[in-house]
Image (tube, rainbow, N blue to C red; front, top):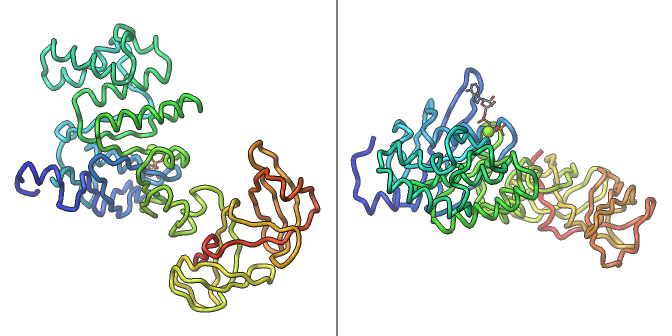
Length: 370
Ligand SMILES: Nc1ncnc2c1ncn2[C@@H]1O[C@H](COP(=O)(O)OP(=O)(O)OP(=O)(O)O)[C@@H](O)[C@H]1O
Ligand SMILES: [Mg+2]
């Protein structure tokens, strides 16, 4: 445990601008490493999403930051202080979970005021602050109701009001919107962003919904099998995934098996022989050696089609119309590819059996070591 530090240093954290730091976190349950050496930092006022498939360790990381669970090894820092073993109620965190966990027998106002009562704040101030929090989530007038008399979205807003009523520095949310239907979820995503900006609070938000992470987060930490795969802005994750896992997990991707024709450092252009025998130019996402097996990742919207001329040969198998875009399934000499085409009419209305030549910009095709 670190010695007490000055206030200024507390606010700026460890000197590298981190508000919350997770260092080499390991948590095992029996043989399973739920979290397997995860390190990342969250900046003050940042909205960080923890994104990953089921069982990837998201909730476990959040529970360790919250102080509801404790690691086998590693360290949690908040504001530059080691809080790894600090009890939860001394960490000044707000928390919102998937199920609203409101007290059913209490009114909405009493639910929101509850954390203030736990902190021994007097009745008058409790009520005033609870009403202010209720206004923040746009539910004034609902204070006297019981949770059961509210919709799912309203209950989730009450849970948020309760989480922020004592002005926590950090707000932890574990899939808070997953119980809501699509429209309400999208509405609440915007409200949570507004609330965060208004309060200037640091948010760590767990989700397994990539669209939710891409639209809400400043940065996204992608997890798989208890390990951090990549931490980046939504744009960088989408355009420059550093692994085939992230390329496949974020957005849609075609994978075309291939063999590298030459040596290339990561980031360089390299020739490959694609499965099916044709040659193409791609970008090495990893350092590659001549003869190495790779997987070339190309997004459906980055494949260009031409009616004739040079390029990889492919034939339309199916055209899937979806309003603003059409997705073509194209049989190539390698895999069947998904290709997104707009409605500008330049390709006509592709029918099954229509042949095309296809190509891409080198930077859009990324080769990962297989
Ligand atoms: N209390 C526990 N006892 C035993 N195993 C656990 C416990 N909590 C989590 N695990 C295991 O640890 C791994 C990570 O679980 P965790 O709940 O962190 O995943 P998650 O990413 O939040 O998944 P989900 O998206 O399904 O909520 C899983 O394999 C899970 O079965
Ligand atoms: Mg979880």
